[in-house]
Image (cartoon, rainbow, N blue to C red; front, top):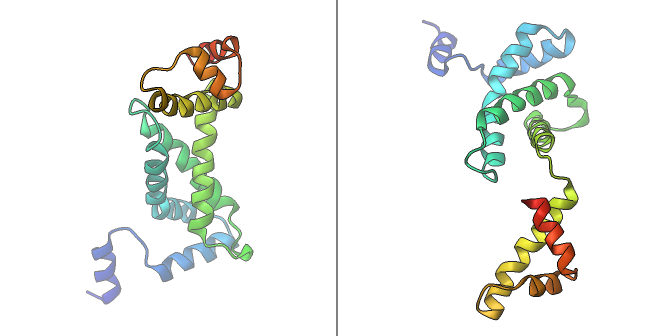
Length: 162
């Protein structure tokens, strides 16, 4: 058995770096489905890496498989649009595209506008500080005063964030 055959058996279906360079060169010259598929398989662990990071900030009830699905589409887009002449390493470019695809998907399923998220963040930031300061649960008046809004506006925020 030749050395390259032994290496192929040892590493499974993953190409060596030199083979990967050859695949990229061929793909840039004539973008074939077979070369694109090899690149997708090679870089698929990158999608899992990004999904793990993004999922860390999500509720446990969120289906991570959805992130992986969307991430693969982001990876395909990255492979299709990657321009090595810009001086970036593919992995750096791909992580950005994959994460962007995942965040876009999360935004599309989140019905709350950014302003509601910002208001909720303000309330969530103020509450623990007030609890420590007054040694108990703050009243709505105290929370509203701390944020610089009226109690009516605070109740509106509570209604929006459910």
